[in-house]
Amino acid sequence: MHTTKTYPAAWYNKLMIQLFRIFVKKFMPPRWFCRPIPKQTERSAKVGPLKLEIVSHCWQYSNMLAYQLSSFVNYPPKDLKLQVTVFYCEEDTETKSTLEFFETFEVENVTWNWQPLTREKLFRRAIGRNMAALVTEADWVWYTDCDIIFHQGCLDSLASALQGKQGALYYPRQERTTSMLADSDPMLRKGRKPQLVDIQTDEFSLHSRDKAKGAFQIVHGDIARAIGYCDEMRAFQTEVNHWSKTYEDTAFRWLLQTRGEPIEVDSVCQIRHIHKGRYKKGTLLSRLRSKIRRMQE
Image (tube, rainbow, N blue to C red; front, side):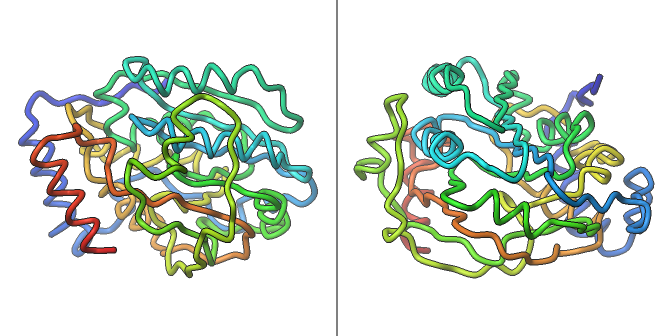
């Protein structure tokens, strides 16, 4: 059973992360910070029906999680077996209600797997990803976020693209995104009630991706089981009191020494949104972050 590594001082953890960003990843070998990675020739090259685990986190994003979970009900895979793992905190009652609603659906080739965590563990995304990685039975693990929608044909096109593959890390070459949506947008309002929802894909614009980052990391199952998700990097397995910047995504690619390889995956969609669930609504920080995101848009 995975045990979260904890340290008493928040400043120590922040210091270690900054040391990684500035010094460690430039001057130290990744092998010092993880167990041996299975060589490509040692990894399974699965063909035929695949087993996929999709791992996401949700904190105060139940209105977007509803779209993600609906996509598995509306467009279940035919060519792979899917386990949907969602890490959440029971204090987030709206997310809990959404999960309880979808748990009532029996969907062919889909297994629900809800994993409650304390706030402190949930807020360090690498902790949940690491827990899932070490025990997964899947051929492939897709680390994602709850604002990603796996629309019609997405999962079966993924199954086709991964046939016989032995690479460490892949990502979809393209995705479709909305513009930056405000909380008042009808799409976000609709998802607030636990219910089946769907999107109009013509409201999403097509964009290319250049590396496996954030919500677009598709990892070989043999690697996930062997090294977890930054399992040996203490700073990224430490509980925190607020949602942390996801520098562990960079660390994970550094450990694998790859940006990932692009593959053709259909109908990967993302809801882009101004308000971040990690920030309390109405605070100065929340307003500032929302303004920055509008300017970026």
